[in-house]
Length: 307
Image (cartoon, rainbow, N blue to C red; front, side, top):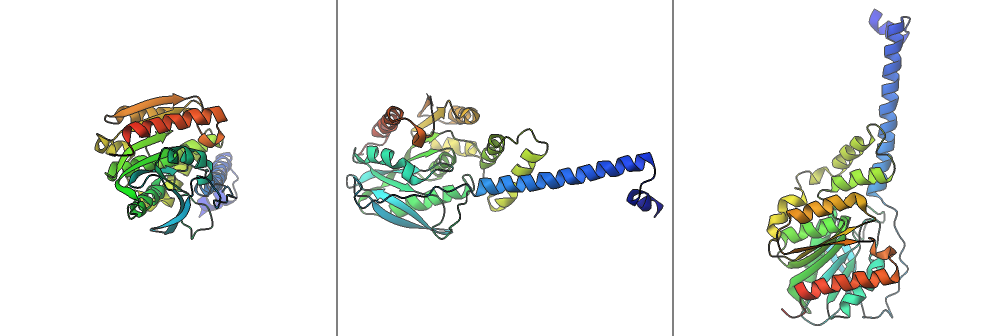
């Protein structure tokens, strides 16, 4: 009792020091928890971009499509190409939307490919949410399964393109679905937890004590149901024989090493290229055309219109 009383009302110098240390530790953990919680919320609920695109008179005659997922339905735009041609699925990256990929979709459709654009997340959910690849891979599987029900596409041959978060989803699905015959990934990472840690650094919080570890742990708790998901590197051997293009971007320095590591681990056939700038939506017109030509050339060689 005397010990508890001493800590409640310290009179000795050592008890005052211990009480001050405990108070500092408590408030440090409390502040770290609050900051980490806010960062996790920002990661899981990135700012949404409002799309004001009317496809009624859009070139290529795209149609609105919807595919069932485990959490609701997935909305997309289907650009028809040559009947029975393969379909290329373009997946938006973290904090981007399908509308930003319309020029790339048009460039592919002009060469007779069927193209699908879609946004990750359920139609039923009004709030944007992200798992940095876990659930997004399931959404991509649902989109391919829905496309495979159509009678105007090649149901056995699909190509997939993605960047950062959607690159993770693209490789994840390619490792488990033999219908994916060619894949392009830009600025990819091995585990969603890796991206969570990179986002902490981008928010300028990497040097704060406890924050990176608390965010990574909290992100893991938030996505506890995916805890048994292996890293992409574990499934890469299953991509033997599937053409792969790995793109790194000079302005995405924190993802260059992970992209190159996965490229080195991947079996043949594979290609690698370093871009001066990533983020297709933010490229200048000349850069966009060069990028589109690179993607188109890869698919024309490795996913021909006629098998």
